[in-house]
Image (cartoon, rainbow, N blue to C red; front, side):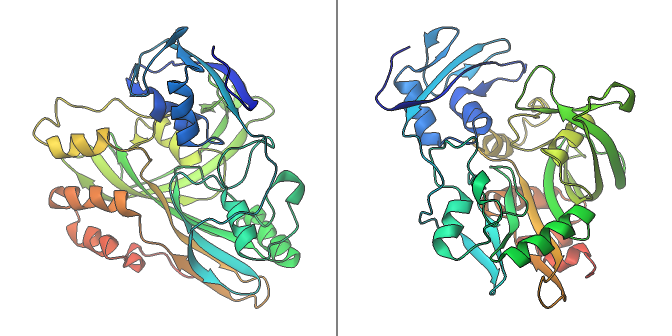
Length: 354
């Protein structure tokens, strides 16, 4: 490989083991979540990322068993408060509730990163809890995947941090997600409670395992899924996911295990059924152009750490999610509720205050 100026941030190989073709740059942006899209694309163009030992273009379509060799060069950084635009849903002296955009990493990983994280942006914006500072995540009580959008609470004081962390630990804090899923959905409501652990072949993925086969590192994950609407003869569904635990990729890996996937998920994706969607070229175009997963944390319930009063927050799905709902609404089994969601009237989903 050609060596660029700067420090070597990452050197690794990844074998692509999916039979669905996906653009190299999109795959790596979702696989290497501590590094920016621009750094990845620049590295492909500078030939420090190779496929099968050959330079390729960013739009190269990965095929099953392709071997990706990666070397990323740049500046090694530590935690540094820096300006970052984000939407504040609520703020007082103790907590800050944010509606996170897709593509934003919550906190740095492994001490090196190439883009401003939410934790750094919040630390620049306001005083935050000192808890988690050594792990480059001061004030961060819970997290969202890089390309998952929606609500996240930040603690501004140590007392608030301890109180909120306890709520998440005992599961009194509640998180609700909207997921646009592809694949047939067979039941109105289902509760999934299964063990999951790191994938034995692909370390960026999680996998569902039977209890008798699980490793010591496996975690029990529980989610209640409710179908809000189906679209296009049941080939797509809008799901409400009630998280009873907060495991890595929990919703995404459980949907995959059910034979579904979040639209836009590059890791647990299903092959798009183009044969049955030929009459919907607009939808196929929306899916092919998507570079984020349509998974949104729309509701957060917690007890205020100082007043001890129950609080509930809502966040309307982001623009790409709304674009899909705009297209799918005429095919909806429940168009009225889709209209309410498009308008941000999320109380229609029936989340009861604590």
